[in-house]
Length: 487
Image (spheres, rainbow, N blue to C red):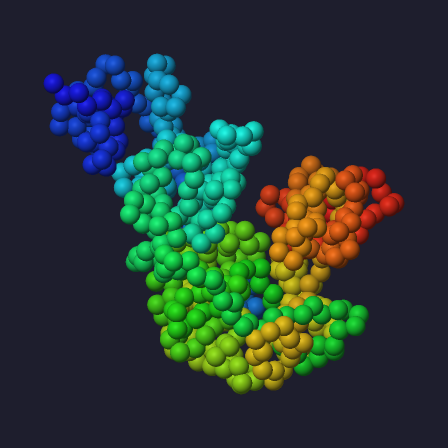
């Protein structure tokens, strides 16, 4: 007599995984894609269907890129309306935890190696989970092709790509078997491998070796702010759009992108295979205006099809640091033009416009901001590439001011250890955020009291409606409540 436990889905089981089929008993000649004689003790399954909706790719204005047009990707991120999501409906005797949601076949997270999650989250959907060892509550969210959890165990996996991380809360929500298949497919920790080890795959890149090494920041040319009242005359300088992306250096020796801090971005092989072998490229990984959060989400993953949404916008080459800026740009153009067919959906060269006068700069800034751009960059004509912050590269942008109420403090780290690291604040809208920059050493030692109204400066609001890069300005003594910026 077979004493193997019976699969609770019996002939309706969808799984093909050999481990599952060996662990649980199924009908004779069970076919995961079809049905055999149904066991009357197992509820019947009713499926519905839906149509996935793909948003248009955000584009950069033609006058600020080298190419006249930008091709749209055939692999845009899927966005499925929550109300249209089909469900597998089981009979009334089935426990709630037995409910399994179904997604269209195009969804890469709907089924991995024949294993489906116990719970499907739509792109952007969140759910709350409670800690079993404390009173803490954490948020799990799906973003494109990966999940994140706000618990410390998930957040502390800094060396692991986002879509290769997991935690006990994700395992409980999605199922241990599914999670093992998901993060193992992306080079995450699995049996016989360490959490920090990553693999190379046709759709992925090369992560750091299993032994953790300290990243070495590359020596990049960094910008100073340009003051509209006291800054240098921009006449004769080169102007370009300041892209709202992720700064990245193409390292031809390592054959990978690295961040400002020296951490690698695990771009797919198809994305990097035609980049130069003897010339570094400085630029921004960019999904489009207003897509900063989405760009971060993509470039911190491995083996992700979402890289098809990214373009590498190149504006310099450190390899030719002793050459004037104009010659460096010409060298980049020569290489990219020689690989036009291979790189047309990978690389854009950021257009440089010679500034006529201050009015020309302000007019261009106004146009860029009106189209959702972050601001402008100014490069001094004939300047060399310095691997440091330089007066030959200036950034021009505007900011917004608003008021928030202080709710508490976050302890400082590093040089701020023992003082305030950030102010925990609440907006007029009720949204919570932190202000960690703009505070002097004295203000960190004696921060504004809880309940104080402070002014902060920021560039823009994130899709969640909180300020991006908020900077502390000072305490407001003439107001008694938070006030959000009204565009």
